[in-house]
Image 1: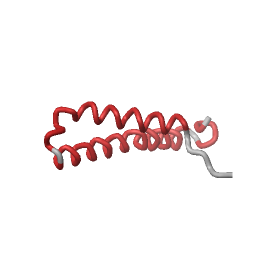
Image 2 (image 1 turned 135 degrees about the vertical axis):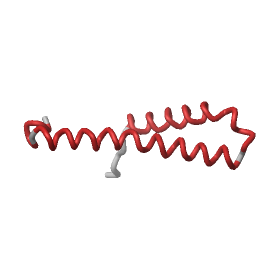
Image 3 (image 1 turned 180 degrees about the horizontal axis):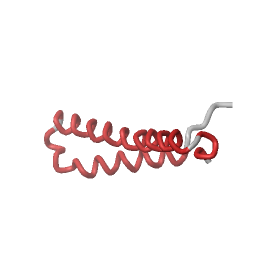
Image 4 (image 1 turned 120 degrees about the horizontal axis):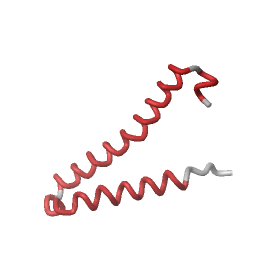
Length: 70
């Protein structure tokens, strides 16, 4: 639909911006887990589980959506 309203190039730019918007928060969460692991080194063996847990929580929150108070 964006291609019909904006044209080919602007719609591709919007798609690239949307993909970047989806990818960057995942990098921030992994950086946060890295900071947590550096603060508590005994949790190093649980790094992958923590990353996957945060990813699942963020996915569920995004799927539920944000509701505005009425």
